Length: 305
Image (cartoon, rainbow, N blue to C red; front, side, top):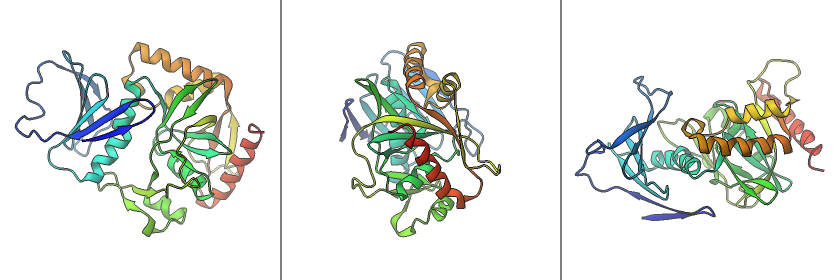
């Protein structure tokens, strides 16, 4: 058994070695709690979540056979693999979407964003899948900025600010992005044959991975890449538009009950009123990476004086 500790609480993670009972046996007291609208290769939902009516336990099952059991207090995770899965696949799901679910169930607001350190504060790049969150974070890491998180940015309220918690010392990038950013293959390892991304490890030093939470300073909403001659460019967002963009790009927002949703609106409303939230439109040409980096740095200089 391995115990993973954070400043939120400890989590116990273990593999379920009891093969005598099928994952679907004795599930009469379960109710289907969530069904993903993302299909697998066979057209079936890629993810389903059940909740046990009596104990409150959650069963998180992916269609390829990987199942995670979460206790009602969301402090104990059991993993069952049927058929057996490579440890890299298990780690990808555990450290990404499953821990994201754990945070949401614990009441932590999570942006669908990657975050980097900039002059002692956190800058988040938020957007829909494929918007370029990891790519933009990798660009900043390549320029010497520490990375805080990839794809999921967890927010905690501390005194008069919201801080981004550090996640794990790697970025997941598509192979073509690696080529564009000139990463060497020798420093990367494949995450998973099913995910097809490449895990780019950060070296763990202060210059590459930020190990302490940082106050959130700004959010950039990544829009669809544009062939507009102005690209890359940045546009301001009014507080109401900023709030709606954040609501649309919070992680795991489809699993929230009314109490969780109210708390999320409170957090996002405060952020929309107090921090710059800007729309970032990148160009379709990868050679504009340097221009995009300089553009964001110049824009941040207006707010971080």
